[in-house]
Image (tube, rainbow, N blue to C red; front, top):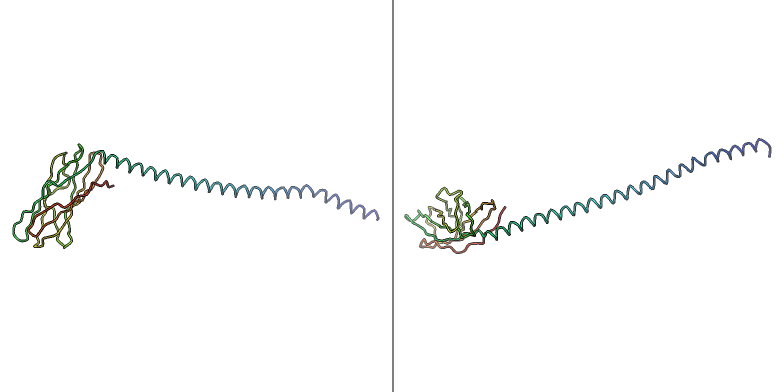
Length: 202
């Protein structure tokens, strides 16, 4: 081996040796990149999982909060015991198709006055429309007091049932509704058939 070949080998060896740090650095960069990518993926998975857990917890808390509100309202309703009953009902007739129905409601609640709201008209099953005849919009009924609601219809039809939904509100602005069912006989006798328990509404 001549001197030239020896020098060439030495130069290649020196070049390889000089490249080793760069190669090792590149390998380290690749390893760090992969580890960072793995860590980032794991972080994203953990973040997504924590976010889902947080949203689930938040939803459960919201549902529980709404349940507690409804329970509190219901407990307050039970405590106040709002209740209306029918104390009297009658039909005054003027001719064959001029009928006036008077229904008297009584507040038998537990120590609370109620503001009463009634619909303007009622459509019964046979097509008769019963209209409220007085401007009753927000009458307040104290406990053990009564309120008369006046209804009328101009039709020869009789012998049917009809219902009146009474909406009322207490001093705490809790709103309720109660359904009353009546019958009008062929001889124009009004009879209360049944009424529901008061129902708390939004």
